Image (cartoon, rainbow, N blue to C red):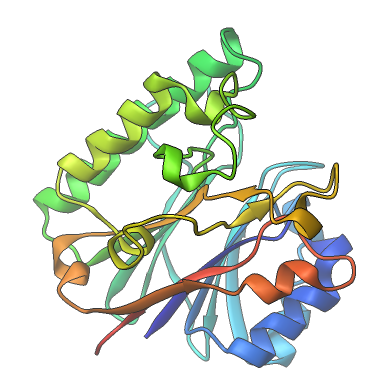
Length: 257
């Protein structure tokens, strides 16, 4: 079972690239972030044509998440991250697919920091940890994946100096991320690439892609029940180099049945 995450940076702008990736790689499940469309304009019919059924949680112009499953209907469990009834941003969607709980997130960026956006990021991560603790306590096979907007360690960026003041590398962001791992979750990409140097994002600016100036912010966290089934994990890096590509590359994990 291949479960993938892809910050598509707008389904309308990237639809040809997204359909291309789905048909070429054929993941069992694809979790999308930054779909950047309202619920009524999500192109579900286009995915249906190639055999994918979808659920989505949209928002006009920015944010938005979706879960696509190959040949089966994702069973929605949770829409929106619990813990703050006033939070109206569409950043979390949870579904059951093939006996695995797929928890798709687009974590707040947090810039500029310090400030209210960074405070929102840290509060959101605290709520995420609480939800993940519930899944752990229930011993549910789960994959929590998406754009975490956290560079966990120095080995996960092309330049520590360039990112020093960014919300993605602040001690508070990293501490919140490592609390998740210490709670018993496995970072699939890091486990299989312990030396680092694996990027999932390259900015559109300053020739970052051409220079390979990237960093790792898209993560796949496995509950113990899924970590025991880990076969492989990787980044579909070549898709970042295609015409009108997202600034993220898809990441994926393979679990044995």
